[in-house]
Image (cartoon, rainbow, N blue to C red; front, side):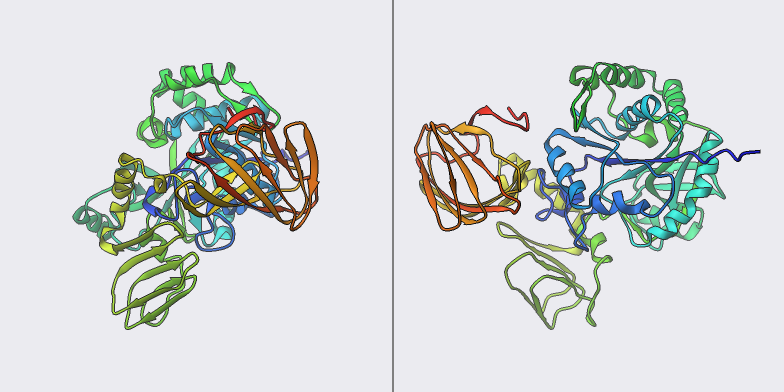
Length: 470
């Protein structure tokens, strides 16, 4: 007899988080999952590569938001990975609608696969231990169970949810506890941290959602069936998706189903949800300081110190978080690390740009970085990747001077089209229709000097755009 082949894993990467507690490194338009926090790879890239080397693994199915679609594409390109599909959620509706869209896609395109659902912003320092557990998870998922992975706690953590378990049997899901309750969980020994990682068959999830959340399933099914496919993305219908209840996987199904089981996972897991959690991912010196970047300490102990450019010097301080970026510096007690999220709320209420963007801003064609700015002028460093182009556009309020530093630029200015190479420059007058392209095989780098009474990014009128931006 011929053995029945094992079903393929379809990694489902949930990539919609904002990571506000890791400000100022994590910003709304460049959140923590796309940042190399403890290595050169981002958390998203590490998640995608977590199953590297395993047999029967399909390209990842990624759920993200519209604003991050080109970040996802670029980071996949960097690690030479082709996705099965990128689904663009029209708005954030929590994890249960996201998984429902993934299951509907899988039933249509990969009906024999098993879903391995992973948040994109968590870390596993021992991915091989995770992979070693997958045959057990596959066996249970094929039998119609929903597998979650529980982490043995090593401290009374108040920032994580918990699972009360008896062997593989789930007794209860518990929200984030207070300190006294967390200490009781740790002492009791029958509670695990909730990792947010799941393994299941797509038809199992759809069946349980139909049983416990029929309205959610109906909205997601309508959004999926009315969605639009593009070469790189799938867009569910926004109106139908907006009607879906915003519910987590745990609240929508796992707290109600009798199909759930938990497997203990010992793989160096962290949700990297705050600066104090990230500290454990960094090597520490003899005084307990975790330092990243250009950092010098004197009589300092127990600190997390990260510089992203300038020299950071700390003298005589203890248990602080000091995070330096080009446009913002965070100084906080580690005991108040969870409150950084509230600080970001204040920045948003004041409409501060530091809540949304870094000085270096990703674009589908590359990125730009603000070098200097003042009244009526702004200087940017622009990098355009090979074969990419900016939109054909004009500005009502600013003129631009371009100086090529590296590579070759194809410039459209009015009716003229011409090439510029290193050390050559050109001038784009106010109101002139123009475009910048990189026809070469290396990155194009140039310095742009803007001048005028208004220099905001919303002073762009687009006439053509290969990335379909408005």
